[in-house]
Image 1 (cartoon, rainbow over the protein chains, first blue to last red):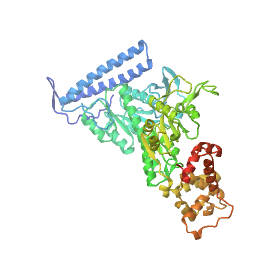
Image 2: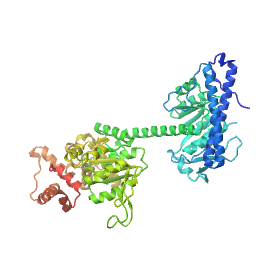
Image 3: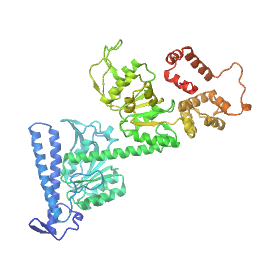
Image 4: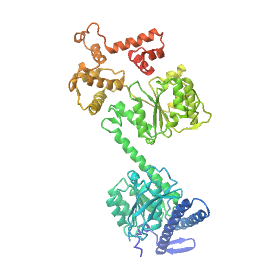
Length: 109
Length: 511
């Protein structure tokens, strides 16, 4: 069983949020955020393992399968980012850039 | 259940085969403590890693903390491919256990961990080892969490999901950052070293200024023109620039343009092909090729014949050379450091040095002060040479106050080289552990005679002439006899052209 998650990042979420025509309460928003987090974890694993596999296989039909895994992973990632962005916006929060920043400052989207 | 796993990568701190990937195959994939066997996978070939122990000393320790197994293992394999030595932990407690026993350089940390959160781990890591570079990963991506992590000292921030290339980019950047900060630390230590900068000795303000310029030059790839009188240590400065910079592992090749005949310089610099001239029995690489990736030091650049100046300029501009007798151009990648004791601007004005080559070489320039302008370094330099002689001979010697006073008053036209020679000669002449005035070279003793009252002068014995005076008469006499032909005079006297010019400068006879 998975141990209890730390939820400090979610502190300050509003009681009710509106996502398009759907209105949700804070626990539901939190639940979606947690699900998105889990999905992001899964997709990161897929993308890295797929990338390594594609590189290892180098060429041929097997490599094509690995590339397809990466491609689908990227599409899934784009969807996660889109949903997360909308959810954060509905909570009045802003999202940081996808890639890390070496300058030490936080990139805002 | 926690996992603590330590595995080693195969590359050094500098990623030199990014295309290769190093996997660690678990012996038991049980999810509990696993000791991995490092296996290198390069271009599809699988081989046991033979170089682990050799590489270990240079590896940076990276700890990956994430509760997701696929991320932990994926990050580990990518990091090992770049050259990190990796450790993994699936929660904060296990991360602390690794931190208790290992000096972690880089931490890849998931912000959302079961139990103690990532921010707590970050805080603790920064408390234990502030220099650890922490990259935080999160799937939440809110500005609030990023700002919080940065405030607590995180170096970088990456949001999940991320792919292989994004991960590599971040790990490479961390590697570069650490490399730079290490180099800066080493340079700062060198600058603050007891005697000077690396192998250069001197603590005078003039030298401190020079060290700062060397540090900057070392981290650039531009050509550097080193100016200074003969004997000031131009080659030592060139070596310091090379060995303090990023190409220190690459070759440093020095060539004295003043000591070689023009035809020889050309074949030495550019190489030749078989049959190019009599005696060219096989192809030979030039020094510009031999220094590939590193530095070539062109000493006495002012002596380079004008036709070769054109060829050198072309090589520097085109980044390729054509060996003597060859038709194919060979690409080169070298940094050029050049030195001269001549006034190159004047040589340009006189037409003996190409203006375009002067500008090409004079991107950065530094002037080494003559010893007479930093006399406070004389005791330090003398002590340095005495110490070196003690190491080679086993006999410890010192300098009397009177001798040192005289040395401090002398102008040292031959600069450090003359001082070094003076110390060696005095050590050879002295019979005791202390060098006295009478042990110093005649030129320095005569200097005292010039500056001290006549009454104190020693009466020279009739028929005995100081060797230095004999040498001066021989050189000036030869040039006079040969109607000013200095090259022929140097050849007949059996000394180098550079030495002849140096001597003439000492005598004030250089026109």
